[in-house]
Length: 79
Length: 476
Image 1 (cartoon, each protein chain N blue to C red):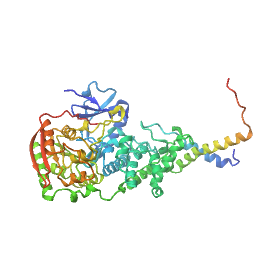
Image 2 (cartoon, rainbow over the protein chains, first blue to last red; image 1 turned 90 degrees about the vertical axis):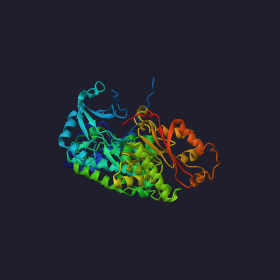
Image 3 (cartoon, helix red, strand yellow; image 1 turned 30 degrees about the vertical axis):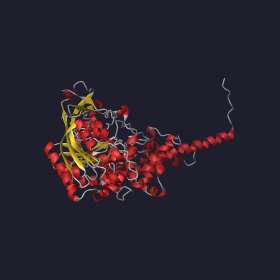
Image 4 (cartoon, rainbow over the protein chains, first blue to last red; image 1 turned 120 degrees about the vertical axis):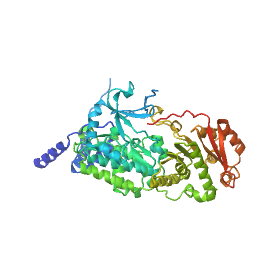
């Protein structure tokens, strides 16, 4: 965890605030690409949400790389 | 006579369905949607939109009217029927553009009343002459502040991208659109774009970014679920700005292929002098005055000269069909400028719109919608018979099955136009003569009158059937 609790806390609070979900409103599939684009066009709130989505991707990549360097799980033979 | 049925094209939106009963068009409002409908009605939005002629008017009908045809509904709305149903893949560029702009204008007006549209299907719009009109009263529901535009993807696919195909590349949307039925996906269009197209904020957002984000989700770079979309994702001012910018962009779009097509120069290249054109128009007026068709079709309408002559002669509504995009644009502009009851559609007679969509019934084919009182086929049959090798007997039968009466023009081989069609081809058209043609006509109908209207021997044949062919009167 970061050693600057004030900034992280602020960021987390903001992200959780904006993470309140939309109601499912339409019979129509809005399209994931369209939803993300509108997040971007919506302003700061949306831009943060987009960053959060992509952050998980990058963080995930980084974590996978580290695990490979540490140790490889034993190969399991299926019976 | 109770011949009611649910229209096969009305099923996706569970808030209600459209029925046809004895020629009347009735739309149910499902019980679970009634609260939303009541809200929209209470805002006065429907009155405002119908007063602007943007929305088809309706009245609440007796709920017993549909009998056992429908259930679980609260209201029945009786809607003014339209003269002719057409589909976005039959519209010309200016018609699709007008429809797109109307959709955006309606959405902006609705937001002023606290209402939004739940979708953006191009099939929610029909035409009265050159004027688009919205037909889906159940698309409107209460706007929740900050909600995203659920119809944005659909708007881009069904309105924007097909217009861009023509504006950027000069490729008309009709073939592609008819094939997919639901327009053009951003991911596909984005693959075609060149650098000069990309250098635009509008293209960047609505085509490239949307496509990029869609790909990210589809190849799992990003996991997006409904709970990750914030409630106040798109504030109202941003939403309105989005719609206005789209409106402004689309209103400036023009086809890339703006050079005059052959058919736009038709006035100069046709085989008539202006006196001959006038006598042809007079023949059409005489026909209309005598036979009094309420609605009339014109196959190969070009820029609409004879549709307009028919309207002047007393016809109430004219639908023109043509293959040439340039001619269709001029036809649309003429109808728009003078506010004529004349609608012009793209069509290839050798490949007309078929029944298609879900269960091959969702969208009706051209012949299924043939319910006009008369059909004109002027300066038309030689293109099909000679250029497209359609057998003359089948062609004459096909035309005469479309309506109970009409005019067919026979263009003889001595005519300069036919001679140019045959110039580089072997003349294999042994039955293409006036006598054989007339024999084909009298097999099915009686000839009321004929007239030779050009020095090259073009013959107008006014025919009338003994009985009306059985055409379905389908309106989706």
